[in-house]
Image (cartoon, chains in turn brown, purple):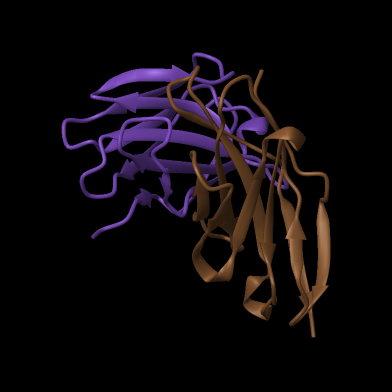
Length: 114
Length: 113
């Protein structure tokens, strides 16, 4: 069965420092991978997506992610974090077996310290 | 373009009652998915509708049911509410296809007393 693991429950980063959020997936075929961000009391906003081709994908708000098939990973990165980046981040894989459901990880909470 | 809108924003019910949550899709989208997000967890897929028919379902009991209307808006109905149904319910719309990104509304916060 498809699954997504986000190993880090909570990460604190200093403002201006770099960020990497980890995501590992389990999926039998070529995965469709997504990163979403959720601010408190809000829905999910799509940061970026990977379907095929270049394994380094660029997203909104200065985020990027790298797909590594050999490691079953799709880690999210940002070179310089801003205080407004504090939020919950979710990695998801598109699962064709159940309609076109998204299978989400449990999320990583990002705190930004000044 | 108008994004995904959900109503109501918040709802309080008691055990055993029934509830209906509503969702208006983003303009042009023909597929609607519903997710349940318990506190501190990632969203869990409930079901998806395409062309007014259920197109996939997650591990939720039959008391969770839905509808999609010709204008692609959707309802989620939950019967015989249980305490564990307390959660944020998210609606997402998209074009059909597993590689199509889903666009989420802000959700309905359902509390069961």
